Image (cartoon, rainbow, N blue to C red):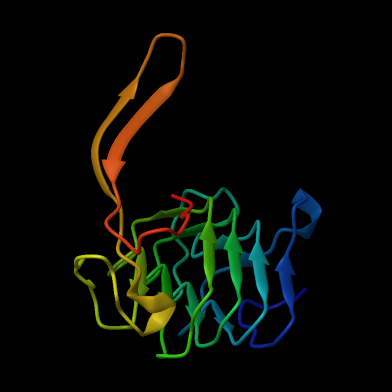
Length: 165
């Protein structure tokens, strides 16, 4: 765990799955969290005040990844000057971005390749940051009186693989 908002490391854990493990990673001039490989960023507030809804932006990216095998899960990542999460480097693969609340960042919520929007392509044969994974296209979202939600969409990607959306 890091008492400051800026951390670079390998095999590090920043935050955790309890409220006591949560970090406030906000108000930095540049990047909130800078990751290499095999690190976990979990349960933190990145770019917000402690209420999780008021801006206290990091100047650039909330989370910047330049390595492989990282997990970014269950964080609030908002109001950062650039991207919420940026994965850069052609060899940066296998990075998992799971169950985060990412909103109101200056550029993209998630940027693969540090090149702004990466367009979807047929069968997703790419190399590059997280293999330039295509993004899902949501065609409808319906909330029902029983409080269930049905989301319909499509993901055009590599055949025979399983993807978590």
